[in-house]
Image 1 (cartoon, rainbow, N blue to C red):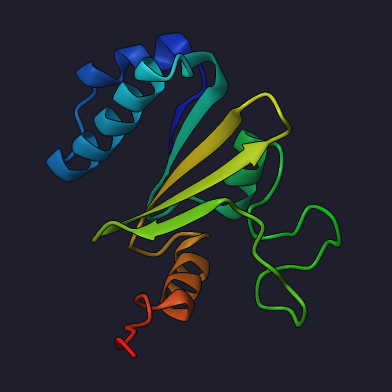
Image 2 (cartoon, rainbow, N blue to C red):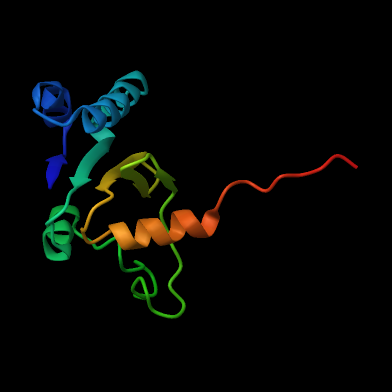
Length: 137
């Protein structure tokens, strides 16, 4: 797991030795945070193969696999996703969870390899599917 919890860590990410595709994703989000003056309100976490749910919960202070209001867990009847954004980036998933009204957000970049969030991301990206095509009437 790679955690970039604050301005200093985010700005130093450019020097990290990351695979090119991951580097491009992280760099794009850091640029957006700089442009939007959101560096102090952004925490990027890269979830990789071998990371555990316990380590992720310890890093975030909550589990993205458990709904924060009703306590249902991914895979249980009644679980509803509560994140603000989920996208398949090809080899990586991007999951955004905003907290409160301050603009603070966790940006989870989830490797499409065995890790605690992969199955959930895959299931909900597939469930959303491509946009429906409409035909003119």
